[in-house]
Image (cartoon, rainbow, N blue to C red):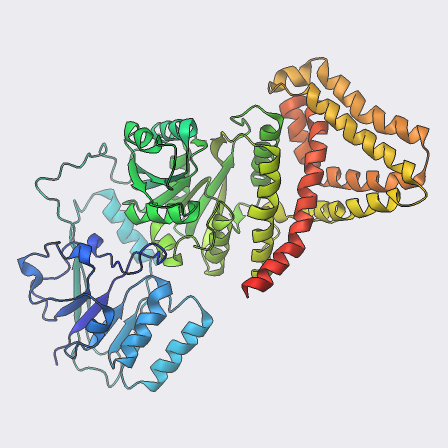
Length: 579
């Protein structure tokens, strides 16, 4: 019996950009000249000009999925789309009376899996699920052998499946798919320097909106990378400054321009669509990657095939010298340096992920239309799917961002705090790591109690007891003025540091001596708990900018954790609204 097979290969996995595209480009010539089976392909308009060659046989092209499924000459449908489309096309194929092969995993949602299992149990056709043993020791050995170059240039791979699917199935069924790339003679694309056979080709994706000088420095840092095999893709998220294209061309980066602003999540997705690398390295337009960043990521991924993604941290030398910018970047650096190396999330400021895994997970969620927690959400999905993520504490990028007070508050609460809290209500088993460790939780609870305690003191008969707390905040304000110089060495070794320390300690103590009211200790004890919970961070601040710098940051940390406390109930409301 001769079988006819239809293949769905809708590899562009971002329906919000264009849900009709089917990506067959990586296969080039899709058909083997000796294949006995006819193949029906759902083909978009942009692909119709691609020459399949004389060896394509009597291939049949379909512009729509329904047309293909209604073709009575097709017996078997292989659903090889990204996971979120599996249920849709597999159920349609089953309803059309076709034998169905579904690539793993079966689906993303439990209800879709149950629907497919129910349909498979009721149909008279055969439905089977494929598996990829990418981490089997034989597969890993073959991958290593190919990369070594001992087999020469590989341009043709044939996969053959023969025999019965199960007892009672078709007596003879064979599916042969050949994939190869063919370079055109007139191809004038600029080539990268030839790397060693063991080098993984990396695609660096940089989303940008009005990047300006920061983008210029970012791309310069990417080009100084010591990794030999990479490309850089800049995705312009509908910038209005007219500089992005010129900067990208000057640094020889590939430029993708979106017609309207979609946010960094979808901009990164669009960049991955054009990426040629096995690994995608994400960074932001205001980050200067260290020259060894790509190499460290690739070393980690090559040495442990079980790791799907890695990320690093900002270094301890922020690019902008303002007190607020130094504080924010150092706090991010410190959180990553104390985090678990077996991470539970992902970060796109300086992070890499295997492209096949990224595609399988469906990319970044389209729910985030502005800079938010799209990378954290992807990390949770990766861990839920069983993938491992590693935090590389020696992989760095320098952050250039100039933080401003109102931007900081808005970001902490509405762009990160509330969405992250809503995400935690969905993933309630998320480990206590990074900003969620037990010390941060103690600080958050204390910060939630602090305004309640202050109000209680103010509206009681002990209103004057609030004065020592105000004295501490005034001392922090004076310390911020004393340490406005960004030079840590001057701040820590000069006269300003002991003066700032004296002010920070003596002002609250003198006011306590002047007003010996036990009620004054309530808000001060809560502040002390918050500082104690972050004592290692304050030690880093002291090393970087002296004692005055550390004292000046106390009010910002209080505000940060009060924002975290506020985000918890707001996040619950957002979670319930999403449901």
